[in-house]
Length: 397
Image 1 (cartoon, rainbow, N blue to C red):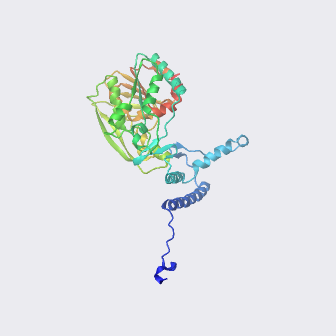
Image 2 (cartoon, rainbow, N blue to C red):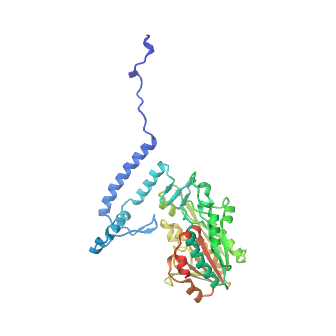
Image 3 (cartoon, rainbow, N blue to C red):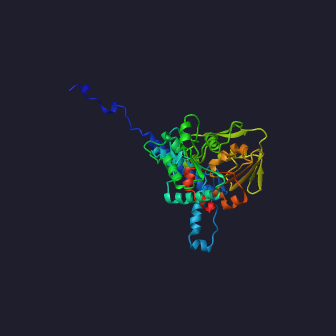
């Protein structure tokens, strides 16, 4: 046998198997995670407690009071566990790392948020509870029948997962929100209510304007303007003499869906809309006279995480807006936070606007309507908020 029939193994370069790229990243993230855990534990012992998380937009737990009774009934340990979780240093980084782990493993949901395509994030939908919806709808119908002299509109918006369904993760199928809104409409029996389902109007405009933020659950100001035009049409109010002008106030908005999921790869712009109408000014009374402003915008909120609060400065139980409009019409708005960016658009058309967010007040709407006469009443909700709501029925009693 000739020598060249065999090649000695020692002459062959050794090819060690390469570690898969995913495993290398995973190992690196584990190492960073352990380092953060160690540093965070040390910081918890030496640092000061934080009262508020801007990234999560919520108040954080503080050190619970230790007592014999709280030890016996177990509330101290429960509250202390919440305190440790909330006050742990580098909490935001840990949430981001967990999301990175999940995405490496192919998961498309994090923190109750679907991670979609092209930077889109979507809320996991609230399930339709027929009994709960009927109870709220009955309360709305009774309220409408008691205020039959007012022009009453119930306007409901779908959420971004319906409008931008093609951006959802592959193979994810969600309930058709257009049909859910129709089911909600069918639960409302009062003939005094003009129900407006915005699904069709939004689908017709989705390729022309950005209707929902990628990183937040709210609609954009442009979507609110489409709803506003539909509203004015139903009330037979001409908008020809009022020009809506838009101004970009930030291009670095990362909203609640970004915070919940830990995904920060995208950002949004926020526009405010200022109606241009001669000699129309207004004063907004927040918190029962404690805070009056000649504007419905709060630019200081652009310096914080939740920049959507540039509209009205956040959520209030009641806002009373007095305008210099020549109109004698008055408006009651019963709403969730979707309405906040629409409110300035309404100011040229009403002498007085009272805005109620049932989630932040215990004032009964029957008392409000007894003390005030409203020519128009608007209910404005997005589908998820309405389905999750427990407060609307209470203030309507």
